[in-house]
Length: 225
Ligand SMILES: [Zn+2]
Image 1 (cartoon, helix red, strand yellow):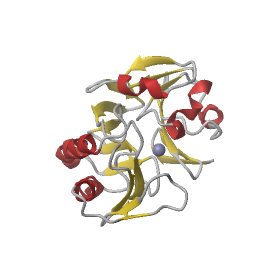
Image 2: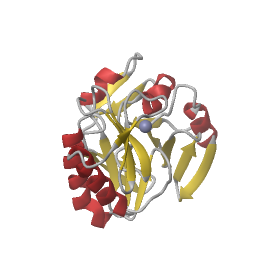
Image 3: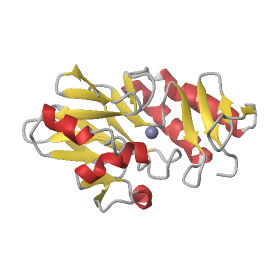
């Protein structure tokens, strides 16, 4: 696990597959996502701080929620609660919820699409956006399976685009990080091309759906999902 102090009180944890973001305050810490079951996120967090940790979830996919069993409770949008199989105490996370810690003020922005309960966290003063899987450079962004919706994804990218002036750094959970806010519009344009059938799908060696290459972003997508 690689751990970097990105700026005062803010750490990036990255096991090479998925990353988490930790903000350490004076009385508690905020952790965004918990990695895979075997990422060892809780252990790493304990090396950084012994304060109580409040867990905020960008969404409920297993590469983000796998470590929840070590924390026991989290804030997660209700539309992703069905994705959590472990016995976790779930607390609702919704549009406009504010979490303050260590000089950061995180505000929840609902961005359904990648999952129905996807949430971004924005820090307007510091101009930071924690985007989960919904904004990425390159991708692939997973858009196949029963809990994805490309139409909602496009609407959510438009919503984020309206916030782009308040964003200097985007922190995706996968691939390059941080990236600049231009990827919101790049992902949007590629998603619209995907939806309009303008991208050619190619067979993926092991994933259950084709890979679509946009100009800036790839999607693993099945039209009926
Ligand atoms: Zn992910």
